Amino acid sequence: MSVPDYLAINRMGKVPALKHGATIVTECAAICAYLVDAFPKAGLAPTGEERSAYYRWMFFAAGPLEAAVINRSLGVEIAANRRRMVGYGSFGAVMNALE
Image (cartoon, rainbow, N blue to C red; front, side, top):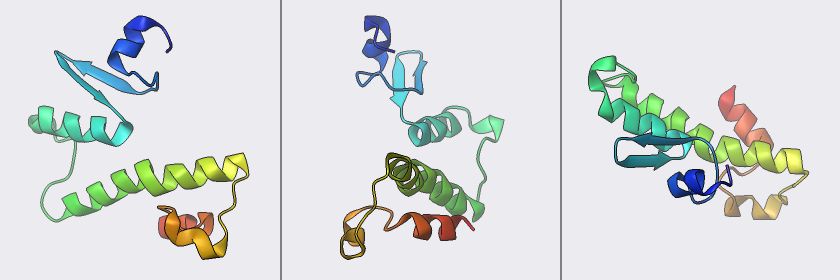
């Protein structure tokens, strides 16, 4: 992921990355949202009132869940008086939201 050809697609060298024609999209949630819009007949996402829950959980996974799990695996503990500074509050709060 550090070869020039891949870095031309994603300068951070992260996966996933999508190249669709001339369009490049990176980040999981952005790729999902892009594919839903690019291929509406495929029915990749719910419609109507269910769409809000789809967005909520897609972006929850890409933001608070990912940050909480990574910090937990690195041994990072957020002090109670600093939890408002992070996008997930605490690992426990994230797990409670999933439950």
